[in-house]
Length: 141
Image (cartoon, rainbow, N blue to C red; front, side):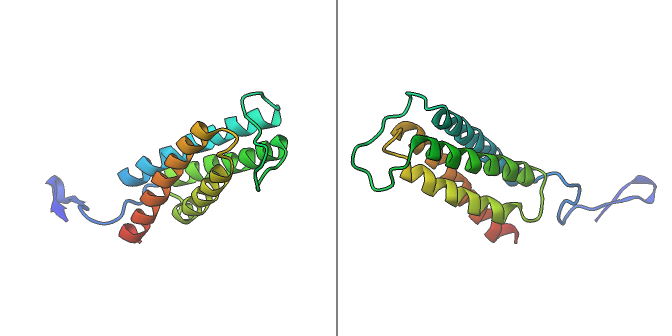
C-alpha cells in the first residue's frame, strides 16, 4: 500500500479486478481474434466452392470442400468468441483458448494439401496462442 494525500490508500500489488485483461492476456487475445477471422474467411471460401483451393488426388483426410468449409467456419467462430472472452478477462478464457487453438492447429494441419500457405500461416498463429496461453496459465494460475 502507498499512502496518498488525504488519508487515501492506493493498492500497488495484487490482481486487477476491473474486468480488463492484463497486458499479456491482451497480447494473446488478439491473435485468437485474427486466427478466428482467417478461419471464418477460409470456411466461407470452402462453402462457396471457391476455386482458390486445390483438391489433392491422394490424401487420407480428403473431405468434400464444403465439409472443410463448415469445419473451418465453426472453428473460426469459436476462436472469435473465445478471443473476446480472453480480452474480457473471463475466468475460463485461458483454458478454452488452449483447447480451441489446439483444435484449430489440427484442422489447419489436415488442410495443408488444399492451401499450404494459408494453413501454415494460421498454424503459426495457433502455435503462438498455445505457447502464450500455456505460459500464462503456468505464470498467473
